[in-house]
Image (cartoon, rainbow, N blue to C red; front, side):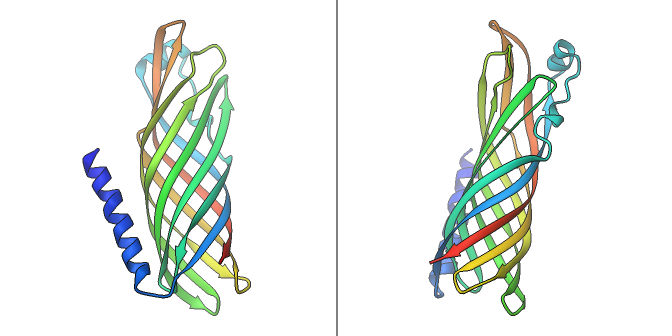
Length: 199
């Protein structure tokens, strides 16, 4: 955990120091994507619930997010909050992300830039299935994103991107005090669209 905290601090310092050496502006935006998660089930969960399809619970689920940060001609640094939820075969899960990201810009045309960068943060996974005790688990999130950014006016830009995260958030499936098994999120993938306002 100390190594993760050090990495978060280093990333924040790198992003802030890079932006400090050039003219910067603030921006805020809204994101929409479709998230699919890969979960690792315990053997007990398979045995007690008849091999449930945990990967189908959050699969192409609508994901909404809010972001805010700073940017210049070279790159940007921003924080994002995201929310999604899904249910499948009687299982119900909710995922929330709180992420810090840094992207580097690569101009390809007038007003058009490619971007790529890294993300660090935390993911909360909540199990809210009917008939089970509700449970939540928080884990790290680390990954990367890339995409294309298009400036449509002096203050407005839109983008399309793809982000992949590795995480270890875990939830238990308990019933009346009896633990029937657990599921741990291994990864989360999301194609997304975003509209940003620069000020």
